[in-house]
Structures are given as structure tokens and as C-alpha cells.
Length: 99
Image (tube, rainbow, N blue to C red; front, side):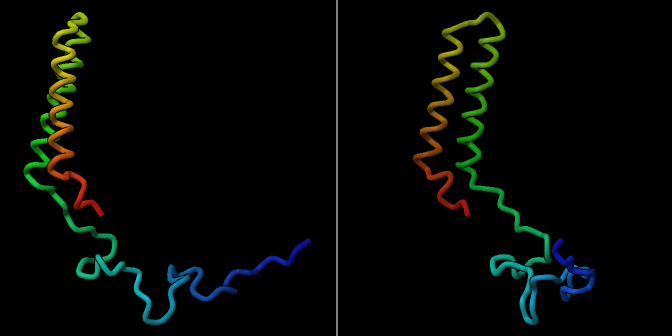
């Protein structure tokens, strides 16, 4: 049977500092201005929100068309609206500033 490590063998194993040496911070460089565990707020650009709202409206139209019938012309209209929203999102670079 293998020897088992007793408690307290590893320095800092019980006080939450294991793996961190002197001068090593647990805050990433990008978050250096924020408290540990706090993340900066990214609300997005207005054109990103417009793109997402157009896509959601398209999905709502398509979903309502399927529930109400199905009403295929309204479903394809919703699909077209969602596609226009997706094209707008890609053309304005909705994910270009994503980290």
C-alpha cells in the first residue's frame, strides 16, 4: 500500500493559497484594476443590440407561425428576418471585440 500524505504536508494547502508563491497574484493582468472575482461590465455596442433584437424578432415570428398553424408564409418571413439580422451581425463584426 502506498504511503499517504498527511495533512499539513503541503504548504498553504488548507489556507487557500496553495499554488501561489510570494509576489504571485491571483488576479489576471486584465483584471488588475478590479477586485478578485469581479469582472468588468461589457454592455456591447448599440448596433450589436439592434442585430440581436432583429434576430429575436425573426425567431418570435417563426415560432408564432408554427404554433398558429403552421402558417408557412409567416414562418419563412420570420426566417428571413432572422437571416437579415444574422447578416447585419456578421457585417458589423458583432464578435470582433470578444475576448
